[in-house]
Length: 288
Image (cartoon, rainbow, N blue to C red; front, side, top):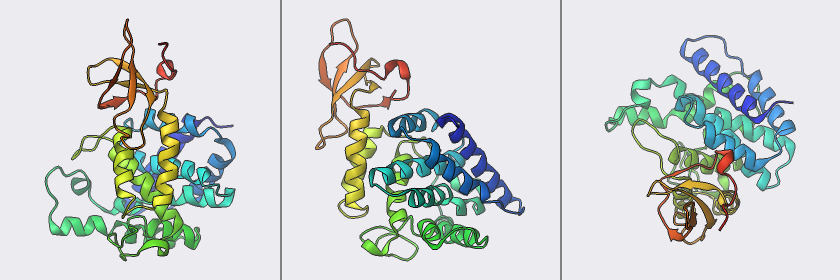
Protein backbone atom coordinates (compact mmCIF):
# COMPACT_ATOMS: atom_id res chain seq x y z
CA UNK A 1 0.00 0.00 0.00
CA UNK A 2 1.40 3.38 -1.04
CA UNK A 3 1.10 6.41 1.22
CA UNK A 4 -0.37 9.61 -0.20
CA UNK A 5 3.07 11.26 0.00
CA UNK A 6 4.69 8.42 -1.95
CA UNK A 7 1.95 8.52 -4.59
CA UNK A 8 2.33 12.29 -4.94
CA UNK A 9 6.11 12.09 -5.39
CA UNK A 10 5.70 9.19 -7.82
CA UNK A 11 3.40 11.33 -9.97
CA UNK A 12 5.94 14.16 -9.95
CA UNK A 13 8.55 11.75 -11.32
CA UNK A 14 6.16 10.45 -13.98
CA UNK A 15 5.34 13.94 -15.24
CA UNK A 16 8.99 15.04 -15.16
CA UNK A 17 10.06 11.99 -17.17
CA UNK A 18 7.37 12.53 -19.80
CA UNK A 19 8.19 16.24 -20.15
CA UNK A 20 11.89 15.48 -20.54
CA UNK A 21 11.21 12.68 -23.03
CA UNK A 22 9.13 15.07 -25.15
CA UNK A 23 11.70 17.85 -24.99
CA UNK A 24 14.59 15.54 -25.89
CA UNK A 25 12.60 13.68 -28.58
CA UNK A 26 12.93 10.36 -26.78
CA UNK A 27 10.53 7.43 -26.91
CA UNK A 28 7.41 8.16 -24.89
CA UNK A 29 6.18 5.87 -22.10
CA UNK A 30 2.68 6.60 -20.84
CA UNK A 31 1.97 3.24 -19.19
CA UNK A 32 3.06 4.64 -15.78
CA UNK A 33 0.23 7.18 -16.02
CA UNK A 34 -2.39 4.45 -16.24
CA UNK A 35 -0.74 2.39 -13.51
CA UNK A 36 -0.57 5.41 -11.17
CA UNK A 37 -4.21 6.32 -11.82
CA UNK A 38 -5.29 2.78 -10.95
CA UNK A 39 -3.11 2.85 -7.83
CA UNK A 40 -4.71 6.12 -6.62
CA UNK A 41 -8.23 4.75 -7.03
CA UNK A 42 -7.36 1.58 -5.12
CA UNK A 43 -5.34 3.09 -2.27
CA UNK A 44 -6.43 6.68 -1.58
CA UNK A 45 -9.68 6.87 0.40
CA UNK A 46 -9.33 9.95 2.63
CA UNK A 47 -10.32 12.97 0.52
CA UNK A 48 -9.44 15.56 3.15
CA UNK A 49 -6.03 14.03 3.86
CA UNK A 50 -5.32 14.10 0.14
CA UNK A 51 -6.26 17.79 -0.05
CA UNK A 52 -3.99 18.54 2.90
CA UNK A 53 -1.08 16.80 1.19
CA UNK A 54 -1.66 18.82 -1.98
CA UNK A 55 -1.47 22.07 -0.01
CA UNK A 56 1.66 20.83 1.76
CA UNK A 57 3.55 19.83 -1.40
CA UNK A 58 2.34 22.35 -3.99
CA UNK A 59 5.30 24.75 -3.75
CA UNK A 60 8.04 22.14 -3.32
CA UNK A 61 8.42 21.24 -7.01
CA UNK A 62 8.58 23.22 -10.27
CA UNK A 63 5.11 24.32 -11.42
CA UNK A 64 5.54 22.42 -14.69
CA UNK A 65 5.59 19.16 -12.72
CA UNK A 66 3.49 19.89 -9.62
CA UNK A 67 0.55 21.59 -11.35
CA UNK A 68 -0.53 18.52 -13.39
CA UNK A 69 -0.29 16.35 -10.27
CA UNK A 70 -2.33 18.79 -8.19
CA UNK A 71 -4.95 19.14 -10.92
CA UNK A 72 -5.22 15.37 -11.37
CA UNK A 73 -5.71 14.76 -7.63
CA UNK A 74 -8.13 17.65 -7.12
CA UNK A 75 -10.10 16.44 -10.14
CA UNK A 76 -10.14 12.95 -8.65
CA UNK A 77 -11.59 14.26 -5.39
CA UNK A 78 -14.25 16.23 -7.30
CA UNK A 79 -15.10 13.11 -9.30
CA UNK A 80 -15.55 11.15 -6.07
CA UNK A 81 -17.85 13.85 -4.72
CA UNK A 82 -19.83 13.50 -7.96
CA UNK A 83 -20.11 9.73 -7.33
CA UNK A 84 -18.16 8.72 -10.43
CA UNK A 85 -17.35 5.02 -10.71
CA UNK A 86 -13.81 3.61 -10.58
CA UNK A 87 -13.27 3.50 -14.34
CA UNK A 88 -14.30 7.12 -14.81
CA UNK A 89 -12.11 8.19 -11.89
CA UNK A 90 -9.10 6.46 -13.46
CA UNK A 91 -9.85 8.19 -16.77
CA UNK A 92 -10.19 11.52 -14.97
CA UNK A 93 -6.83 11.04 -13.24
CA UNK A 94 -5.15 10.26 -16.57
CA UNK A 95 -6.66 13.31 -18.25
CA UNK A 96 -5.76 15.53 -15.30
CA UNK A 97 -2.16 14.35 -15.12
CA UNK A 98 -1.69 14.89 -18.87
CA UNK A 99 -3.86 17.98 -19.40
CA UNK A 100 -0.92 20.39 -19.79
CA UNK A 101 1.55 18.02 -21.44
CA UNK A 102 1.44 20.13 -24.61
CA UNK A 103 3.37 22.81 -22.71
CA UNK A 104 6.41 20.54 -22.85
CA UNK A 105 6.83 21.82 -26.41
CA UNK A 106 6.94 25.44 -25.20
CA UNK A 107 10.18 27.07 -24.05
CA UNK A 108 10.50 27.82 -20.34
CA UNK A 109 11.43 31.39 -21.28
CA UNK A 110 7.84 31.80 -22.50
CA UNK A 111 6.13 29.77 -19.75
CA UNK A 112 7.96 31.71 -17.02
CA UNK A 113 7.98 35.12 -18.67
CA UNK A 114 7.18 37.95 -16.25
CA UNK A 115 6.57 40.59 -18.92
CA UNK A 116 3.53 40.64 -21.19
CA UNK A 117 3.52 37.90 -23.81
CA UNK A 118 3.80 38.78 -27.48
CA UNK A 119 0.96 37.78 -29.85
CA UNK A 120 3.14 34.93 -31.14
CA UNK A 121 3.85 33.70 -27.60
CA UNK A 122 0.16 33.86 -26.70
CA UNK A 123 -0.61 31.78 -29.78
CA UNK A 124 1.91 29.15 -28.69
CA UNK A 125 0.44 29.02 -25.19
CA UNK A 126 -3.10 28.69 -26.50
CA UNK A 127 -2.04 25.86 -28.80
CA UNK A 128 -0.98 23.59 -25.93
CA UNK A 129 -4.29 21.67 -25.63
CA UNK A 130 -4.10 20.71 -29.32
CA UNK A 131 -0.39 19.90 -29.10
CA UNK A 132 -1.02 17.76 -26.03
CA UNK A 133 -3.93 16.00 -27.72
CA UNK A 134 -1.74 15.12 -30.71
CA UNK A 135 1.07 13.83 -28.51
CA UNK A 136 -1.22 11.63 -26.41
CA UNK A 137 -3.35 10.36 -29.31
CA UNK A 138 -0.20 9.23 -31.16
CA UNK A 139 0.47 6.45 -28.62
CA UNK A 140 -2.94 4.75 -28.98
CA UNK A 141 -3.15 4.07 -25.26
CA UNK A 142 -5.92 6.37 -24.02
CA UNK A 143 -9.63 6.39 -24.90
CA UNK A 144 -11.47 9.25 -26.58
CA UNK A 145 -12.89 10.57 -23.31
CA UNK A 146 -9.40 11.06 -21.89
CA UNK A 147 -8.21 12.64 -25.14
CA UNK A 148 -11.14 15.06 -25.14
CA UNK A 149 -10.50 15.83 -21.47
CA UNK A 150 -7.04 17.03 -22.49
CA UNK A 151 -8.16 18.84 -25.65
CA UNK A 152 -11.10 20.71 -24.10
CA UNK A 153 -9.79 21.68 -20.65
CA UNK A 154 -9.63 25.37 -21.64
CA UNK A 155 -13.12 25.43 -23.15
CA UNK A 156 -15.64 27.46 -21.16
CA UNK A 157 -19.36 27.03 -20.63
CA UNK A 158 -20.18 30.35 -22.31
CA UNK A 159 -18.10 29.56 -25.42
CA UNK A 160 -15.29 31.96 -24.51
CA UNK A 161 -12.64 29.25 -24.25
CA UNK A 162 -10.32 27.56 -26.72
CA UNK A 163 -9.42 25.85 -29.01
CA UNK A 164 -12.92 25.21 -30.43
CA UNK A 165 -15.08 27.70 -28.46
CA UNK A 166 -17.41 24.89 -27.37
CA UNK A 167 -20.36 25.64 -25.09
CA UNK A 168 -22.13 23.87 -22.25
CA UNK A 169 -22.73 20.15 -22.48
CA UNK A 170 -20.65 19.91 -25.66
CA UNK A 171 -17.62 20.14 -23.40
CA UNK A 172 -16.39 16.78 -22.10
CA UNK A 173 -17.26 16.18 -18.41
CA UNK A 174 -13.60 15.49 -17.57
CA UNK A 175 -12.67 18.83 -19.12
CA UNK A 176 -15.28 20.65 -17.04
CA UNK A 177 -13.96 19.08 -13.84
CA UNK A 178 -10.33 19.75 -14.80
CA UNK A 179 -11.19 23.38 -15.55
CA UNK A 180 -12.31 23.88 -11.94
CA UNK A 181 -9.31 22.05 -10.48
CA UNK A 182 -6.97 23.89 -12.86
CA UNK A 183 -8.34 27.27 -11.81
CA UNK A 184 -8.07 26.47 -8.11
CA UNK A 185 -4.49 25.23 -8.27
CA UNK A 186 -3.34 28.09 -10.53
CA UNK A 187 -4.75 30.71 -8.15
CA UNK A 188 -3.26 29.11 -5.02
CA UNK A 189 0.24 28.44 -6.39
CA UNK A 190 3.15 30.87 -6.68
CA UNK A 191 4.29 31.51 -10.23
CA UNK A 192 6.99 33.75 -11.65
CA UNK A 193 4.44 36.21 -13.01
CA UNK A 194 1.85 36.02 -10.22
CA UNK A 195 1.84 35.57 -6.46
CA UNK A 196 -0.56 33.01 -5.09
CA UNK A 197 -3.83 33.91 -3.42
CA UNK A 198 -5.41 32.19 -0.44
CA UNK A 199 -7.45 29.00 -0.97
CA UNK A 200 -10.62 30.75 0.17
CA UNK A 201 -9.99 33.64 -2.21
CA UNK A 202 -9.63 31.05 -4.96
CA UNK A 203 -13.00 29.52 -4.03
CA UNK A 204 -14.58 32.97 -4.14
CA UNK A 205 -13.14 33.57 -7.61
CA UNK A 206 -14.36 30.18 -8.81
CA UNK A 207 -17.79 30.97 -7.41
CA UNK A 208 -17.86 34.19 -9.43
CA UNK A 209 -16.75 32.41 -12.62
CA UNK A 210 -19.34 29.65 -12.16
CA UNK A 211 -22.10 31.91 -13.44
CA UNK A 212 -20.67 31.93 -16.96
CA UNK A 213 -17.34 30.21 -17.60
CA UNK A 214 -17.24 27.17 -15.31
CA UNK A 215 -19.79 24.40 -14.79
CA UNK A 216 -22.04 25.74 -12.03
CA UNK A 217 -23.01 22.30 -10.67
CA UNK A 218 -19.39 21.17 -10.40
CA UNK A 219 -18.42 24.46 -8.77
CA UNK A 220 -21.17 24.12 -6.17
CA UNK A 221 -20.01 20.61 -5.24
CA UNK A 222 -16.39 21.73 -5.07
CA UNK A 223 -17.05 24.85 -3.02
CA UNK A 224 -19.42 23.10 -0.60
CA UNK A 225 -16.92 20.34 0.17
CA UNK A 226 -13.90 22.66 0.37
CA UNK A 227 -15.74 24.86 2.87
CA UNK A 228 -16.28 21.76 5.00
CA UNK A 229 -12.59 20.92 4.63
CA UNK A 230 -11.39 24.36 5.71
CA UNK A 231 -13.72 24.75 8.69
CA UNK A 232 -11.66 24.19 11.83
CA UNK A 233 -8.34 24.46 10.00
CA UNK A 234 -5.55 26.72 11.17
CA UNK A 235 -4.58 29.87 9.27
CA UNK A 236 -2.07 32.68 9.45
CA UNK A 237 -3.88 35.98 9.95
CA UNK A 238 -2.78 39.30 8.53
CA UNK A 239 -1.58 40.29 12.02
CA UNK A 240 0.82 37.29 11.87
CA UNK A 241 -1.11 35.38 14.55
CA UNK A 242 -2.20 31.76 14.11
CA UNK A 243 -5.97 31.40 14.08
CA UNK A 244 -8.62 28.78 13.50
CA UNK A 245 -11.52 29.06 11.06
CA UNK A 246 -14.81 28.85 12.94
CA UNK A 247 -17.30 29.51 10.17
CA UNK A 248 -17.24 30.30 6.46
CA UNK A 249 -20.12 32.25 4.99
CA UNK A 250 -20.77 31.01 1.41
CA UNK A 251 -21.72 34.59 0.49
CA UNK A 252 -18.31 35.90 1.64
CA UNK A 253 -15.98 32.92 1.42
CA UNK A 254 -12.71 34.86 1.65
CA UNK A 255 -13.74 36.53 4.93
CA UNK A 256 -14.33 33.68 7.39
CA UNK A 257 -15.12 33.97 11.07
CA UNK A 258 -11.85 33.25 12.82
CA UNK A 259 -10.78 32.51 16.40
CA UNK A 260 -7.26 33.83 16.99
CA UNK A 261 -4.89 31.79 19.11
CA UNK A 262 -3.97 34.38 21.75
CA UNK A 263 -3.98 34.42 25.59
CA UNK A 264 -7.44 35.95 25.31
CA UNK A 265 -9.20 34.58 22.25
CA UNK A 266 -11.41 36.88 20.29
CA UNK A 267 -13.34 36.73 17.05
CA UNK A 268 -12.58 38.93 14.09
CA UNK A 269 -13.11 38.97 10.36
CA UNK A 270 -9.85 39.10 8.47
CA UNK A 271 -8.43 38.60 5.04
CA UNK A 272 -6.46 35.34 4.83
CA UNK A 273 -2.93 35.81 3.56
CA UNK A 274 -1.70 32.25 3.85
CA UNK A 275 -3.27 29.08 5.18
CA UNK A 276 -1.47 26.53 7.34
CA UNK A 277 -4.05 23.88 6.58
CA UNK A 278 -1.29 21.33 6.09
CA UNK A 279 0.38 21.55 9.49
CA UNK A 280 -0.95 18.62 11.49
CA UNK A 281 -0.23 20.26 14.81
CA UNK A 282 -2.50 23.15 13.88
CA UNK A 283 -5.28 21.18 12.21
CA UNK A 284 -7.65 21.06 15.17
CA UNK A 285 -10.06 23.64 16.52
CA UNK A 286 -8.54 25.77 19.25
CA UNK A 287 -10.11 25.98 22.70
CA UNK A 288 -12.28 29.00 23.29
